[in-house]
Each structure stands twice: as structure tokens, then as C-alpha cells.
Length: 150
View 1 (cartoon, rainbow, N blue to C red):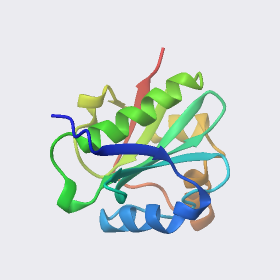
View 2 (view 1 turned 60 degrees about the vertical axis):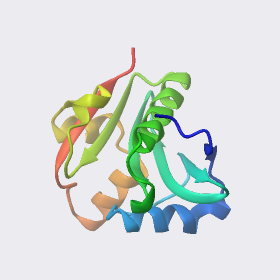
View 3 (view 1 turned 180 degrees about the horizontal axis):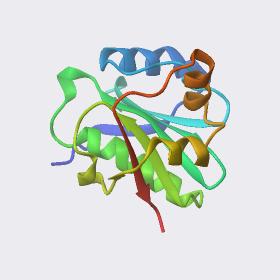
View 4 (view 1 turned 120 degrees about the horizontal axis):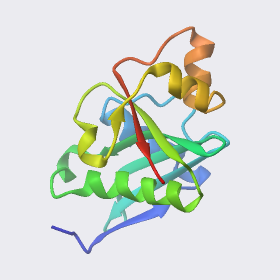
């Protein structure tokens, strides 16, 4: 089902609080949101933000940085629309892969496969989220995923 009243637009610096709110409400990390070297989008329905997604860019690869839809708007495939819009953007910029960290869910339905953490850390070492983990001396929790974009 598609919702014709929903749009996805490129986020600007003025959208930072909105992106952080949507991510926090979904229990996602907000460190380095909208940092340099990233692209974020806001999903809206009737002028109200109902979702957000981001990509942190490396050299030929990107890190999917959060994908969230507010609880009252979930269901109906809106989360899938957000994720796929980011993947299509990464393809358009010529990325060979999109990586992500996840604490749950089967991302195989989006074409992702599980990969070792070292692969992501080595392929996109300057991504803001990876830099934030390193600065704290932490490792991302959960599972590491990759989607090939050839």
C-alpha cells in the first residue's frame, strides 16, 4: 500500500532537531546526526515529520544511519520506503555497498547479508558514527549488515 500523502525530502541543518527526535523516539543513537559527509531525509505527511533516515558516506560505500518512522505512522511500508530511498540514493552516487548496524530485525528482506564488524570498520573508517564509537572506545552492538549495490 502506498500513501500518496507521504513525501520524502532532503533534510537541511534546520531539520536536525526533527531527525534527532524521530531517532530518539525509535531508540536509535543520535551521535553525529547530520554531521559533515552525511545525507539525511525527512518523511512527512501533511507537513508533519513522521520519519527520518540517513546515510554516512565513505569512499565508494555508505553507512545507513538510522531509519525510523514514528509509532503512530508505522505499518503500511513507510519504513521500507525510507530505507529503499536511501539505498537508491547510494546506488546513484556510485556506492558499491551500503552497510548498517542493527540490534534487531531481519534486514535480509532488504537485500542485506550479515558481515563481520571489521569489514565495515575497515571500509568506511571515517564515517561519523564509526568515529563516534571509536572516540568513546566502544563497539557497535548487535549485528553488522551489508548490501551489495553492483
